[in-house]
Structure formats: C-alpha cells, structure tokens
Image 1 (cartoon, rainbow, N blue to C red):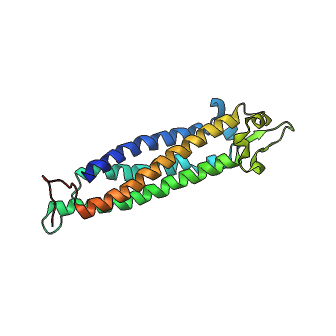
Image 2: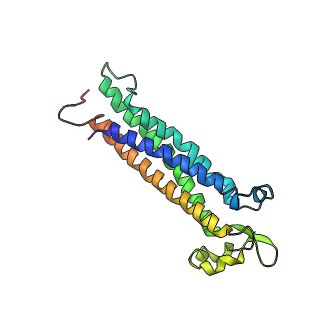
Image 3: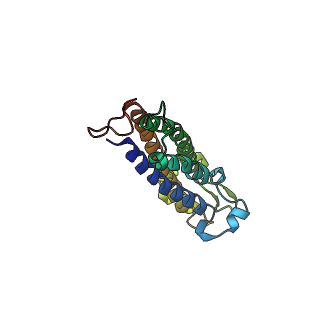
Length: 202
C-alpha cells in the first residue's frame, strides 16, 4: 500500500469538499436569492458563525494542500536518507490532519445547532423570531409546521437543505482527516510506500 498516494487522494477530495462548503454557507445568506434578509439581520445566528466558509472551507485547504504535496516533500531527509524524510513528512501530515478535524468538527457542530434551532422568520403574528427554537428539532420531522414561517418564503426548506449539506460535507471531511491521521502514522512507521519493490529503512 502506498500511503503517499492515499494522502494525495484525500487531499484532492478535501479541496472539492471545502469549495462545496463555502458555496453552501454563502447561499445561506441569500434566501430565495435575496440580499435584504442579510442586511436586515433576519438570518439564523448560526449563519454568521461562518462554519462552512471558515471551518469546512478555508481551514480545510491547509491540510488538503499538505496532503497533495507529500509526493514532493522529503522533509530534507534524515541522516542523508531521503526515504526517512518521506516518513517525517507523513508524520507531519498528521498535524495538518488534526487541523482539518478541528475545522470539520466545527462545521458539523454549528450545522447541527443551526438545524436544531431552525431559521429566523416572520410568523402569523407579524413578528420575526426563531419559530421552532423550542421544538428541540422536532419540527424537522413534522413538515406541516413549516408553513408557520411566512417570510422569507420556503426559508425552512432553504435552511434545512443547506445546513444538512454542511453537516454531511463536514462529516465527510472529518472522516477523511481521521483516515489521514491513521494513514500518516502508518506511513511514518512503515515507510512512504510498503511493497516488495520499495522498502524504506533508515
């Protein structure tokens, strides 16, 4: 098994997942494609936590590019052995993976809280509030209650869809970074590639 190749695959996957997280988070600011709700502060408070933009987005680029660059990174070698440097680089990637775990974990937690609390909307009493805040997330299972939100139109579907996407994407990122922690440790111990043709012994 080539641990470096596995890390690069994870890195490329994280790049696309991070881009999708950023897009999903940005869309949360524009219900129905309108900007007035953001300017009037009629959005869920969890939208302003930038979980998809920062946690599942920008912060994920660091580990992603570290993983992708492992093939060229020999960590200056050790004792004149380039292969030992490859091991060093693999172990260093574990630190980058931990950063990714923190970022994706933040994305997952905020998205889950956003789903549980529900959106800010104008109700039948013409008041803007968190209509489903006291339902402990049960409103997610009872779509008939979603009509309580009059404005923005379909705001419940909008929030549920995008926060669910962020939750799923963050969860996938978390799993991939966790895999890279294991992969990095194994690559550091066994060598960059373990095969009969390539044996990296210091």
